[in-house]
Length: 336
Image (tube, rainbow, N blue to C red):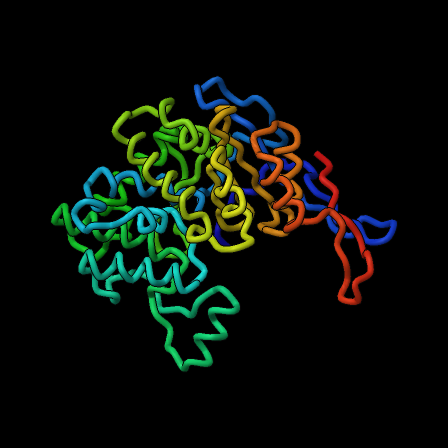
């Protein structure tokens, strides 16, 4: 058996009740960090523990390709820039944007390091199956991010072969940039689900990175800050391209004060522009189910979301849940 590091000390975040009993308890860690580097303002659990950024790192990973000029060289529009930070679900408008990016950059579909897949969204997958379509790489949830990297490699004259390897010049520079924004000089490097290297930094560093995405004037490098601002502006302009209708990140991105993105395995992060704060949450059981109650509770505590946004969140992630017969079965209770 290989060696591994045990999970850090976590705290209860959400309890799911059924009748008079607590049926499930979701533990994790959370923190609120100031954009100006003033440190952790509020927290629960060990926020110094290393946490893989997963897809929450996409807006940061887009910085270097944008600095390299991919948008100008390949005539990528704002909705294409939104796809650099997106985890697409295979919706028609998402796939169309990805395909336009690929065609304009002249990237062959077989250059993607990951395998061909079906759309993730259930409706899109059903329509795909009825039409007798075949799996394609452009349906992959991370296709937009990979296109940004491959287009940048093409401009720099770097080989597309091996573009996802940790020692490829593109990945070395992207990893360094991600760590810089998270205030982490080093840390673990793992392999993400899409085949790219993925950095692990303290959870407080992820919150700091999102504070800086919301307030790029506090970021270390002005040129990089301008590139990050292009990505987050595009994500806010096209929130449903970033994840999809009803997804937590897309609902938050529709609020002009918020930059948000989910990761995999329980990570969620957002930044608040007016409040100049970043927030990161990690559920140690890897679930998405408890994100809604946690994020709603945090926004009610620290502010930053409009009443319209809070109403949309409460409608999408109601505290009371019902069974298939329509009867009230239990509730989600934030307990931190």
